[in-house]
Length: 66
Image (spheres, rainbow, N blue to C red):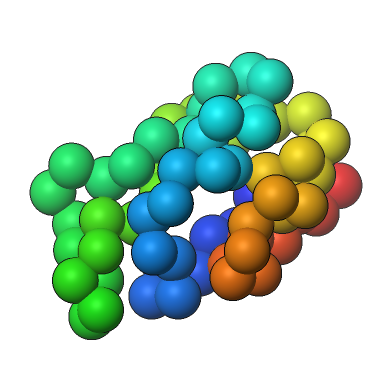
């Protein structure tokens, strides 16, 4: 399971590129308090908890639970 702190996310997209299953995308409608479109999860059920997204996140906004 992936948990994203959307308020801390700057929408850099590194996690989107790192995800081998393509379950992450930038939110098209939501904007956080800092003015960024945060990353959101498309399909939690397709996540294999590889944690590549959390490893590449420069702001430590992502937690992965197995």
